[in-house]
Length: 124
Image (cartoon, rainbow, N blue to C red; front, side):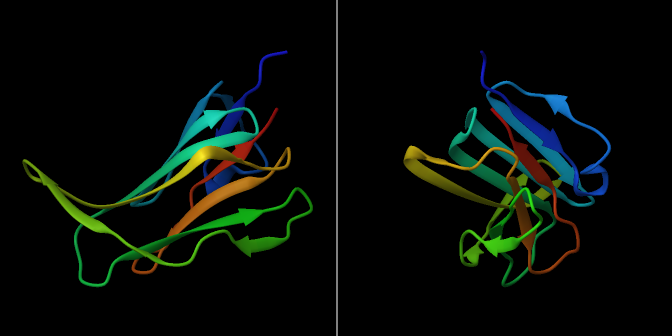
C-alpha cells in the first residue's frame, strides 16, 4: 500500500482532502505551508507569509485525531525574502531522519503577525 500525505486548508479541514503522495501544500490567507516527506514520516516543513515585518516569527502546531492541540516547536524567526516585487517572510524546519506522526495528525503553522493557520493532515 502506498503511503500518502493529504493536504487541507484550515477552513476546509473536515470537508475536503486531496492526495499528495509524498508532499503537501496548504494556504490560509497570507500564509502558506509546505510539508515534505512520505506517509507518516515528515522530513522538512517550510512556511511563508506574504509581506515583511519586524519580529516575524512562526511555530508548528499539531492537532491529534481527537482534536488535542500542542506546540510542536517554539517560535522561530522568519527570514525576509524579496523576489522582484514579491515580499515574503520564510521559515523552515528539518528533521534528520524525519519525524513520525500518528495517522490523522494535523500539522499546522502559525505566524505571530497575521491570522491564518494552514494545515496538512498526515495519513498512511
